[in-house]
Length: 344
Image: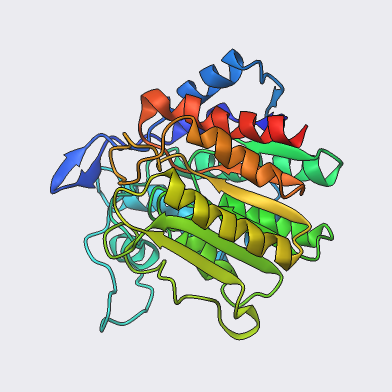
């Protein structure tokens, strides 16, 4: 399997995250990648390459230009304003407040963020661009003939809307790759999001599209981030009606119930007639994940990979979440291993 990875991810390492009323070391941290790389080496998955130069036109096909300008300038503007810490907003235009972009950087941060755990640092924009380049390089390899690939992306992406960041995400790598597949000639693309947290950004980007099917298995939003999207009755709008399927699941869900939801999602993907599948691969469904409440075991990820392989479609895996760092490598590579064994 072709694997794309960049060391630039290390440039993004916020020193604080708001969690439970405290400022803690972020759960999404560079060491996550070290465990995955080690597990890849252990399984002899060593065909790892650096990404090609990022084509920003493919990023702009998904993300708002004003939002991209904000991400590119946020750190410099923050420093020029005299702030000494990492970029965090003090206000967000929720509910009855006006949705109008301010001029001051503190207000602009609030305008473009949807959750406060995510900080911007000096290296965030470069790391986010590199992460998108990883996804696009893997997508290009498949368009050039590779049957499958793994984009080892960091920062992750599926919580990024076209014009909002949060949930550790800045650029929506899976959405960017899916749109690139469409531009390369794929008539229909399916995105299967198996991260514990709902892919709210991906859903929002394609919600009115009939050419991209989105299926997400995740913790029920009544009890799990991102709370405000991910309900079962969100099925798409306009031309996209029927092309969005959410599988919200309760605390304590183990593979038997989770696997039934996966089977249903896979059947929908088959009926949709997708020419290629993009998998938002999060392994925070693991029983020991510190910010999740599912109960999957390490061996269950082999079953997940095998089930996706039975769709017999070109498949791009894009790394998302997973915060039980001691197990993230084994669980991630189990998905790839299960896929490869079943794909033959």
